[in-house]
Image 1: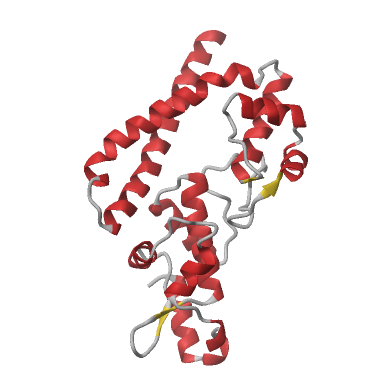
Image 2: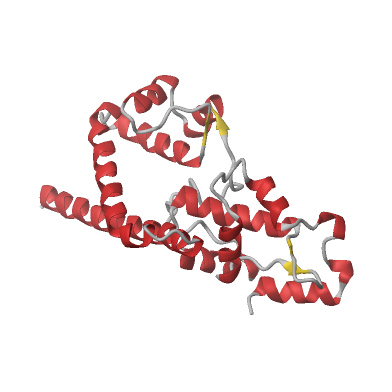
Length: 242
């Protein structure tokens, strides 16, 4: 039993600790509340996350799921970690276990320099001026990054745009401009094509569990490709300095 489920059982024994009935949401209401941030979220995906033990909504006597405000925030965090950081479910499960245990874990795989040592509230979006302020980048650098297809043009940006811009600010100090990185987009697209080919047998299935499994595997494959890419760069740098 997870810590979240244990707390839920405590809440059921002590109604004073649980969310009021007016705060509880049906699965349809949860979908409506999260649809803007996660338009591909479906009934089946929510059930899949429950089956995986990532969220544990309460049940009515008739068996209907009821989600508390805390459940909704937990779902928002899970979906954000999948979408924005491509984390597999087993990593997300471990991260949630730390949170349930009262710890404040850093985002798995986040840089150790403190830039993203804790998770910014999931699903947060930033206006252009906020992105520039948070990243320390100039408007010209953001425009150059968009022209080089490193950052997609948008009215509002996610956390990844800030992280990328911070890196571009540091690279610019070394004389590396966004235009020098144009090839990275082509490389990323080749990797995506490779991942799509690897997942084709699963992607052909139309059931929700297969789609969820494909989404999880895509994150895992992307993570392994990152490991190999980083190793190749380190190896090449070693030859330069030897």
